[in-house]
Length: 123
Image 1 (spheres, helix red, strand yellow):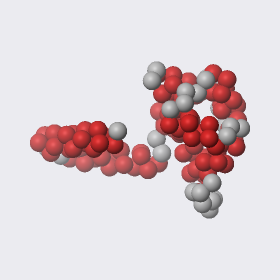
Image 2 (cartoon, one colour; image 1 turned 135 degrees about the horizontal axis):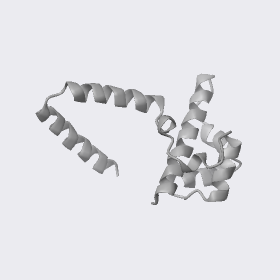
Image 3 (cartoon, one colour; image 1 turned 60 degrees about the horizontal axis):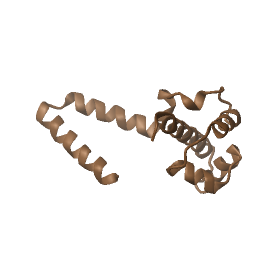
């Protein structure tokens, strides 16, 4: 997968996380949020499912997503470091970093190997 394809997917997934977070904060149930987001992007739920898994986002669709989500032209093509992570992911990384910094060398090596194994098993 080339960089722009990966970047666009990461960014649109971050947009979905923001969308879902806002909806659930106002009391919406998680069920139906995928279809709601697809409707916001003016695409079918099937296309949204394909985008999440492997379908590249072309230039025309990228500009459509940016426009409909209130982002500037080209936003989807640039890594958005602060918006790629969900709040849960940020919390996990902060906790992991604190634990890493407090650990000794052998413990760090053990964690690194276990996380590599977990990542490989996850696919």
